[in-house]
Length: 157
Length: 95
Image (cartoon, rainbow over the protein chains, first blue to last red):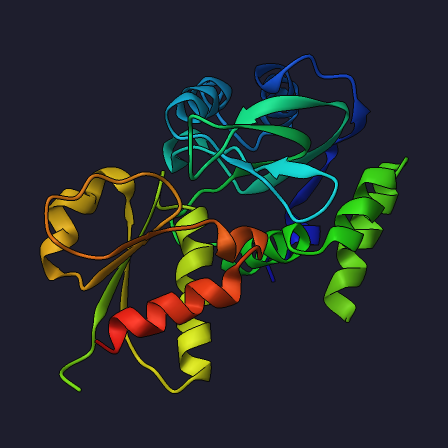
């Protein structure tokens, strides 16, 4: 099963990351996915380019907001998800209203290799984004194992 | 009611976001005994696909010439206002 837990790339989980801006965090996470063999080298630039045209910032229902940068499948070798919580929020733009900015504290960088695939994983991410308690738990995580456990435990409910 | 209505679900790349939205709409309508055709596409593809659609649900801005209802929403991702959006969708497809 392509659960989020299975697709999370351990080496691409970064907590309390001191990212300067949106580009910085996409670069840092994207580099980890590339180094892990999940993406081509072109992935990061493609994700950044897409972010400028069609941003992925999502204002959420709690204290923290998130972004889910991703790009076309041609830049991906195998599916994987990179994850970061940020020391201080960085500015993304709102997916629905690109002129608006969103202060983002949590980033899921998605490497997806087929359109309409990985639906279970995507639904899990949407479920997390809709759950302020879960977002808080993830923001408070200090070790990568905790993130995997929190996300894995969600499936058991 | 006439034949099944078609909902065009658009997002930036038609990889991630619209997949979640399409599934969420399908499930919400199914739960209410409503059946629709759902097509996923990139925002840029909307102008070429709009002829066959009765309603557009999109997470990102789209340009549409046709006189067709457009619901632009992040509700299926963030949960904010989801029930309202489902009601809007139902109203449109039952017209």
